[in-house]
Image (tube, rainbow, N blue to C red; front, side):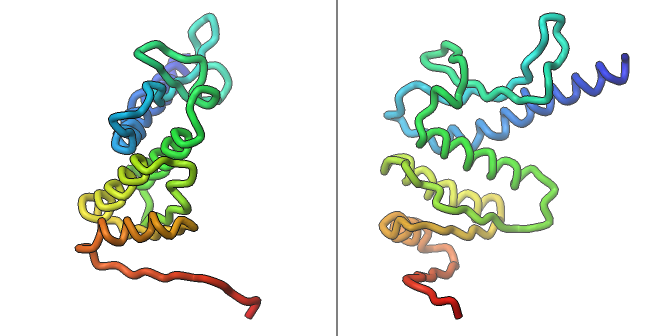
Length: 168
């Protein structure tokens, strides 16, 4: 029982404190000032009535005007869910024991408005300059890629525009 309680406490801290903090760090960088106040608010481990951890599921919390919502998945817009997914990916790559010094990010600004797209450009600069990561971006949004290239002009990089391909 002591070992089980110890492991449960460690798991709870890893999810509700450490993972939540790491993901919120990146999520708050994507938010814009004009965002409606419905946002991701950390992770939680659902518990039984007796207080033990229920199943092996992680709850994704959200709040609006400092009031908890039933679920981030049902409350956040598609844009904010994409921002959350990107934040989870970045947090795991930065903190994880990955032997790779790069991130591949596929279409990070799909369904995001212009303000969030600008924020993601800033995050890309941060990943390169502050975290020392190589970032490989894939996107169908040519205007956003032009903006990223402009915003990251001082960073040594390459750009490839693939307009078609064949089976060969």
